[in-house]
Image 1 (cartoon, helix red, strand yellow):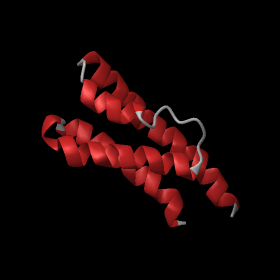
Image 2: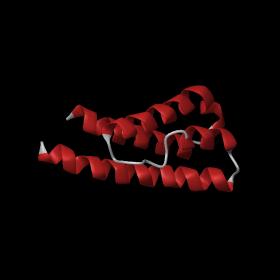
Image 3: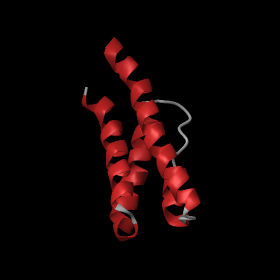
Length: 91
C-alpha cells in the first residue's frame, strides 16, 4: 500500500513534465484548441488519482477529436501522460 502512495507523486511529477512541455510548445505556437483541452484539467491541484484520470481523459479526448492537428511529438507526449496516469490505477 505504501508503494501506491509513493507512486502517485512520482506519476504526478512525470505528468507535470509532459504537460509543461506541451504547454510551452502550444503557447509558443499559439495553438488554442490543444491548450483548451490541456487547461481543462491542468495544472494539477493535487496528485490524487482522480485528478490524474481527469487530465488523462482530457488529453485522450484531444487525440480523438483533433489528432490531425497534432504533431508526432505532441502525440508521443500525450500518450506518455496517459500511460503515466493509468499506472496508479493498475496497482
